[in-house]
Image 1 (cartoon, one colour):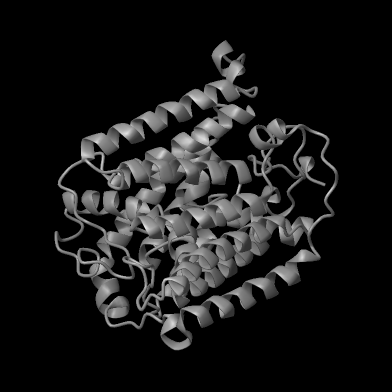
Image 2 (cartoon, helix red, strand yellow):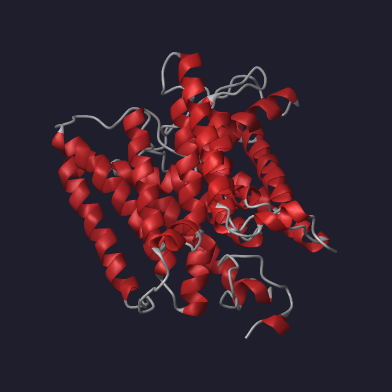
Length: 415
């Protein structure tokens, strides 16, 4: 079927149009600042969401892809990108706390409870990421790129969150309530925690460095490398880590799970699946507060999600990667199953890769490392057991396709 002309026009790089979108978003952030009387209420979440979307779209970051690339292609670049995010987030956040002589962590620091339910919840999240071919951030990014397969995935994610909220009274009583929240600076101090985590990240980077493909000279212009071609994963990861550190300075750690959980709690309460008062979520637990909305409003939780999609959309326009793409019934089934696992795992673990892992490691929380480890184990187990050829034997991308573009199910197209 022939695509409409306007869609063909968007499938080639349009940096001017992307710039117009970002200027409009900046104007919207300024408008929010004027309406709110301050920049931090909704203006900052919009800007943070846009930068978040830019980092994810330009670097095409995906923890599933990172482990798949290492297993199949012997390419560690994506994993090095996540290490860059951990390094940048903790070196700036803990480094700033050391410099100012802080005696306590930042407000709302993501120091999550470490109970018996955290490892299996993170594992389920990892498995769901493979089934759905990407995590929550990946599907929000795909939505900004015009991929309609993200719609059933995100709807299922919200359904999984609603299920997690409905189960929260049981989760709280039997697992989370009274669980310890190990915080490295309590034992090592902020400087000691900074050095200890730096040593861990450096050791992992050394192990992965030898799996990094040799860099080749790139004759393309700086404009093309910045706006059209994907960024090196380490650059995008470093930007993501700096954004997490900046979000701590702004008063609330970056993450999309709180936003999803807020909407899910409203839906679960309206449907009678959860009581209006949920211990832990109402008062805050592990640095995450999930308020009960009385109705839909452009709160900071909604604005950051919009900003993320706008940032990804603008970058997709600039790089010529915006394209409306449909999906098959099989795709929809996989997205629904994977999305349910993603939402349930993230809600139960009280976070995901950015909010739980990166923001947690940024302040020295053990919960961040534990979530990252068990989510990775879930991804590895699912990748090894996954029968889909597209997941276990991916081809290297051709032409200007995104490196994690939807891959064919047929083994005829794989090496």
